[in-house]
Length: 316
Image (cartoon, rainbow, N blue to C red; front, top):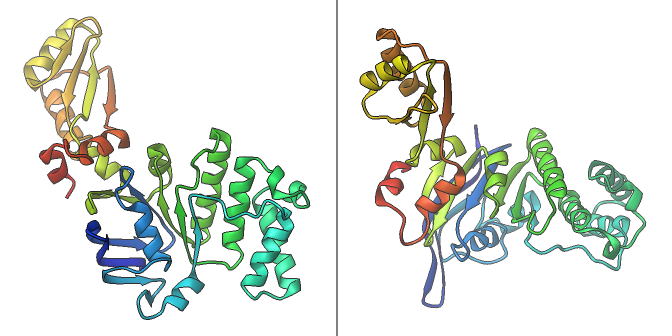
């Protein structure tokens, strides 16, 4: 699959402070890519550079096939940006906000009205189209903000912490919209503080810390790489538990629950090997439960000055 965004050696400093120390990223077309990191890690700086709002100090960037440094106009024509703070004009109605964006994209009057109508329908804002945006709820304003971004049919959309401050229902509605956009061929570059959001939406993600990418992969790959994963095995009686404990050795035993907790990465190969060892010993497992670390564990293991070196190396 072709890359919608390709970044090599991206660097940026503000005064004597190096914010980005040479990062590499690649985002496939029609996918969702999430950039995670603690406050001040440089996530918003990355978005501002890639969306042509500020310049980089070094590195090569291509977006939708265009060189960012040589063809900024072509990049702007191919992208949409929804920042942390809404760009909606509260004095205008939903209709008027969308038509203003249509004018800025040089759409004809008829085409602009048709496109605005499509987006109001898609974002469930038809009933509120003639109300001032200042009367909208936070979730409605965020949906209108994203609809305005889509007026020009961008191929790549940058969403910088788009669900901050939204209630759970509004957040899930925005997630559905993002999935629909990707299914229709749009590429989403997402920054978020909500790790559940990244887990649910991202095809791939990267963790940014100290101006560098410290991990990249699918959510499942990163979760498997962090220590703490295990398999919980339940047995029908103490005799089976004793036999399994003798076979497996390195396991934590719970006699009351008739379970063994066996460290493991949750991969198919290691799980198959574990069950094969029990099968050869004639031990029957009543119940098996797989436990893998969450993205919270990944985030805590990989960011900050106290992160374990072993965890960092595991996800390279």
